[in-house]
Length: 333
Image 1 (cartoon, rainbow, N blue to C red):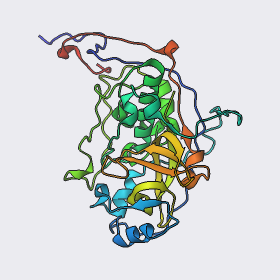
Image 2: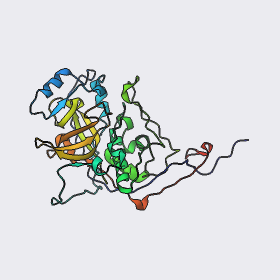
Image 3: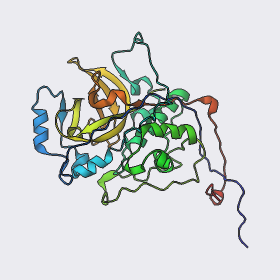
Image 4: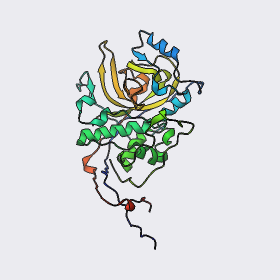
């Protein structure tokens, strides 16, 4: 006799949340890149020498281990921010702050909210063009901690695989603004519930030729859901070489759009203003995974490409259920 199927979906001991969000302006400019040799190495010693010998560069370049075996094509694939569809921002309210608002000259979210360990995390998107999803999920995780004192890591995989065509093309790129709409509409589960499918990054064999988007798992997707924000900007070839200092575009062709998490700002001893950002190319790239970029000049379009949301305790639901694994079924059952 067949085992009877339960009439409802049961969930194991996970904390699942839903929250409503307000939105900030998100605009991504796109310009067609010139033709390049896509199979050549993204890192070239002459470029490092050119940047490091330029007294006006303001930053140091390096043959970063993260991309030691990458071709131009593989590097471009990581830059997964797609141009926002025309008219897609018309219904999104724009947040405008008074110019009289006094801000500190230096700010680092890691120091302001030291109990929020997620702010300082440097993750690895592997060989998938999922930057648009990483930056969104990381920023929202931080904001949950800042708002409610909850150190939780939300699931990139949930957003990447379950938002579907509404967010774009999964590992082949997506729209940052659509990620935050997904949070509002469907929520997002914890990383524990739905871990990222490529934890080892691109240092392992088999990074090519496929970049598959993971399948959406509905078993653990119930609903879930102020500080760091997601920002998008245009990446040029020289960004792959960044090691330290305040980045500004010096040389190389346009590669594509990339999304990262902005966690602070400051001014160098030489008087150069910068934004402080966390990338998701592991700690072997850049300044231990972080980078600084020139502030106040819209370098690479980074100051017109901000999107974020605020979690609301009014709409937060917490559910804890203990059941056997056999009762853990797909929602479609």
